[in-house]
Image (cartoon, rainbow, N blue to C red; front, side):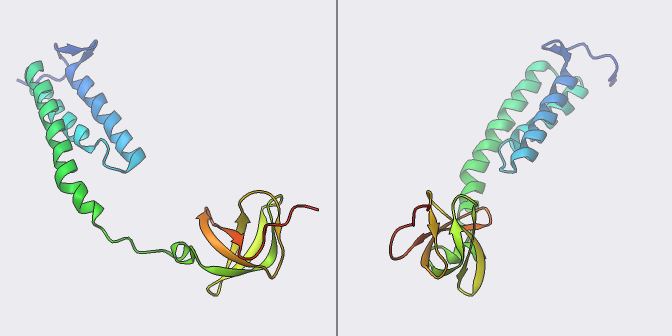
Amino acid sequence: MLNILYLTVTILGLSDALFWGLILAITVIAELATLNLVSIWFAAAALVALIIALLNGSLVLQFAVFIVLSVAGFLIFTYVIRPKLGKRVIIPTNADRINGKEGVVLEMIDSKTARGLIKVEGQIWSARIVGDGVIPEGTRVLVIGIRGAKATVEPINGAIEPFE
């Protein structure tokens, strides 16, 4: 008969059901924190081991099932699921579309104040430069990357002007 209140098998001083419940909780929290399928197979294996513990299965069976299911889940993910995820077509966002494009400075870009505006492909973007200095209004620039919500740019002709 199943008696949850009287559990005699212990792992690290905890009842086996409590131990597997903690492993399950930790792996679920880790998965929710990463969202990268890092520990989902451990969570599934811990759930099955918890069920076995609640049914008074032997400690050896609990660990064997946990290890086998964890390894199987990892292998299935690595050799079956991950290759399919890697073949997804990534659709560029607006930010990706302006990388490598030319634009014009609408408002002076100043590295000290981290302010400045550019117009690229008909869109107005906040902009920044790499290093110290300013790029004056009207200068043609090349978008070399996106960092946060700002385009990182460099002047097409000439260098960044030093501070006065």
